[in-house]
Length: 159
Image (cartoon, rainbow, N blue to C red):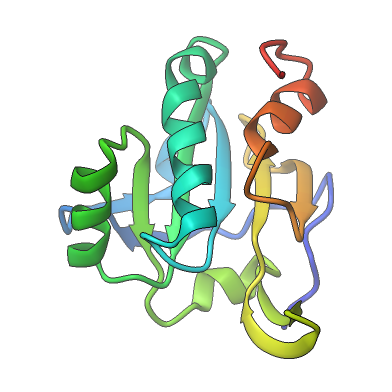
């Protein structure tokens, strides 16, 4: 696993396919604040809750100048089913080989049910308009994370 990102680091650029197969490149979003969050698997309870929370907050996050990108190792086809089933409005990206997760410190050893396993580390990184990291959280909880994120960013609306 690569080192975790910290405030002030340059956010590693990437190009990944979304759930329609269209490529999304982080550097194309310069000039906007970008919330990049990593989750283990579409259509699992925690990941569904987190994706729904981001979708429900998308309008206010967009109004505050943020773009939200959710990244998992799922295929674009599975992400499309996830979007449709849960009526998601956020951008979902596929990192099938986990190379972006590795570069962002969001893949590696973690505790799961008391055992050490290798996998996706639920993480959220906020990228500033200039492409540097402004905030980074690792091993976040799926439930309540968006409200905590909003509070930590000083956006209000956190419950």
